[in-house]
Structures are given as structure tokens and as C-alpha cells.
Amino acid sequence: MIKNPRVLHKAQQEVRQVFGDDSGLHRLKYLDMVIAESFRLHPPGPLLAPRENRDQRVELNSYDEVPVNSYVIVNAWAINRDPRYWTEAERFFPERFMDRSIDYTGNDFQFIPFGAGRRMCPGNSFRMAIVKITLANLLFHFDWTLPAEQKNIDMTESFGVTLRRRYPLRLIPTPYRHIL
Ligand code: HEM
Image (cartoon, rainbow, N blue to C red; front, side):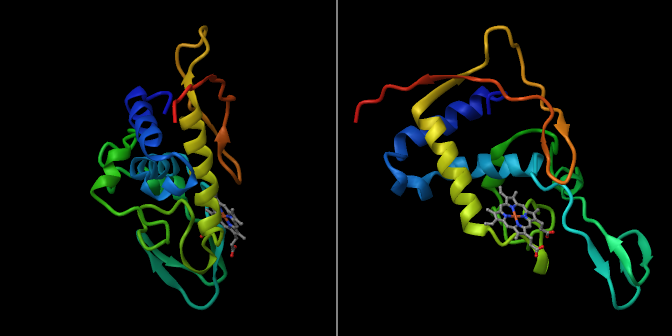
């Protein structure tokens, strides 16, 4: 968001209007879109758990056959930013989720930050509550700026079992003085 002041401002406005306490959480619709867009471009689990083809040869997209006993690893990172399914795929644009449902249940195969099928992430309600409550609180209580010497943020990622920033995120929080 710090790279997109428009998005930051919009999300912060929503949070400060709606989110007096935790009960307003479900009304933060724009924040839902921001979180979905962040998971789309930067899924913490870029490669899903390996699957093994145990029963019979199968056809899979352009692969004519996947022999028995092969491991298949799904690259969620690549799917989430595939230009065949996403307009301006590399752009951080939360509003794209206004016209489509945010489906984290693995039924929308173009958007699988939590995987799909029987091995998909079971931490469903827990993980979203943690992410949303944390972000809403950070947006509500602080204004955020880059350190003076820093002009921009390098979003290069460090790939592994989990996806992390290559360079640490350093921001300056300024406490927000609100009148209740
Ligand atoms: C932002 C938070 C999280 C993300 C992005 C995430 C993502 C994922 C992904 C991509 C998978 C692999 C799914 C697949 O291969 O289809 C997974 C598996 C799993 N996740 Fe999460 N997860 C998160 C939080 C959690 C939490 C909070 C818990 C537990 C409370 C959890 C428990 C698990 C477990 C046990 C599996 C393995 C499931 C299996 O192999 O059958 N996750 N997660």
C-alpha cells in the first residue's frame, strides 16, 4: 500500500470511518479487496504442497500425460498473475475484486493463495482474522511514511517454501490522534 498512496488513503479512510472496535471488521470491504490483491501478487505459499499421481496416467493442460507416481507441484504464484486470467496482471489494483467474488475456498482456480482440494489450507477463519485485524489496527492507529532517505520500496521477493521480502520493510509510523 505504501507504494500506492491512493490505495493506502482509501483503505485508511474506510478503516477510520467504520472500524471503531473489532465489531466493524466485517464491514471493511475495501480492506478485503486490498488483502486479496496482496495475496494474489505475493502469496506466502508460492508452490502448493506436492501431489502424487497414484492411480492412472492423466492429461493435464498442455502435458499429454502425467505418468503414474509423478509428483505434480502447482505454481500458485504464476497462476495468480497469469495475464490470460488477469487484466494488467502485474498491477496492484484491489478494485479488480469489485467485479468478482473473493473466493478463498479453492473453487476459483485462477486465485489459489490457500491452495485447493483436499490438501488446501485448513487455517481458514483463523488466518483471515489475524491478517485483517492486524492490518486494520495498523491503519487505524498510525499514518505511514517512508524514511526520508528512501525514495521507493523494492518489492523483490525471496523464493523458498514460503515467500518473503528480500529486503526488510522499513516504514515510519506516526500515531493518529482521533477523537471518539
Ligand atoms: C496468511 C496465512 C496463510 C497462508 C497464506 C496459508 C497458505 C497455505 C497454502 C498455500 C497451503 C498449501 C495448500 C495446498 O497445497 O493446496 C497451506 C497448507 C496448510 N496450512 Fe496454511 N496458510 C496460512 C495460515 C494457516 C494457519 C493460520 C494455519 C493453522 C491454524 C494453517 C494450517 C495449514 C496446514 C495444516 C496445511 C497443510 C494441509 C495439508 O497438507 O493437508 N495455515 N497453507
